[in-house]
Length: 87
Image (cartoon, helix red, strand yellow):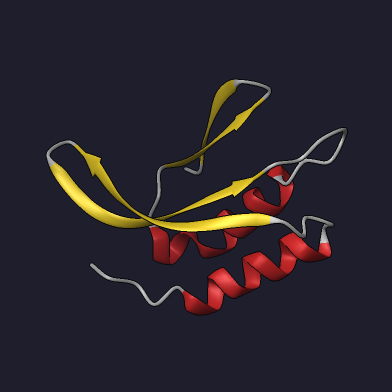
């Protein structure tokens, strides 16, 4: 089911910029999961030092998960894939 995510994505990008992340990529991709395919956005941020966007994403996902209906969100950090449950 298509979602109108323009507003929440704008909010997320503003939060990232406010957090000091001024260079990142938002890419439209086609996801595949259990024989289903769907459109999604892939957000790529390169950060160094102690800067981490994880709390920004965690807050955003929890706020918007009523529309997203995600069980978890995942990110790569220090060459490790981390999956956090939202339920």
